[in-house]
Length: 418
Image (cartoon, rainbow, N blue to C red):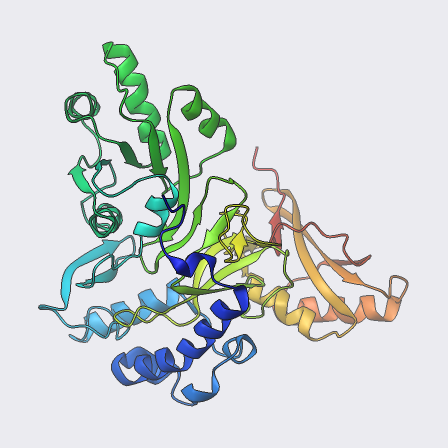
């Protein structure tokens, strides 16, 4: 039996990259022609010329806050509820509409496996002809439907368990004997503990696909000890599947339907491979063609390819949030301002703003990586730029190249809130 969903997973990396870059100009042209928001955002962009990662990196990053603002403005004016980002209208082409906190509305198109979840289910061990117990929410958010449509595309039957009602979940699992569970890892732990408390065996539930929250190795090991082989995936309500875990358990393999960039938080500038930054996604979904969508999540590209034979790039997984905006002495400072300071000085490669002190006694220091560690004039100019950009005074420390932590943090809030 094949260990891969399709041939896309094992194609040569250069073949994949060529296919993605070939699809990119058409996706941009489609978005400009059919999604009014992108007609505006990309009005000065020649879609045909955006056929490389370097060209893609020149386009603006659309972050969730901007998407929300455009949706709210459009709704207030009696316009499109999706803010002009969807190419679909209500009716046959759109099966459902979902809501995420904010409120952001997301369309679900009618195409099979719209969210591309069958790939991660297959990697987690699910196969056609099985019954899946789906405990993601079917209320407001798309998680339940994301998994259900993927399961149907894979050829599986779904029990829509949803959330809550733990005893009833245990009873349904015991009677229906599903091949496995899909949902959050914490709820699976609750179900297994409840089953033990009830004295009910769940021998069929031997595999799981989990998402929606952190899945640390300690919890994975707990699942294994209780007879469940659980794998995780990374997906969002805007984009669908982005990356998925395999039997190798070495990072998450990128989905075949997205172009992923890792950029320095607060900017749209790609970081070197291996450096932690914000995940920016360009989806090839024609119904909701998000171009350079900033997820706000941190991760990093792993070197090499997956031992399972999948040749796509891998990421480390979710590593925190990129929006590190913080209030210092009554003023908001955000990562984009730190990036602006760095750009003023070719001698500086990277910076990290560290905020210390106690409540109402904030102190901030900008640590900048440079080869000019004894350059007092540079230090003074950077200090002046800090005041100019943030309107706040702070110390400047010149530090050696590579000495700042590779954790994606541009602003570190180390204050005491005792």
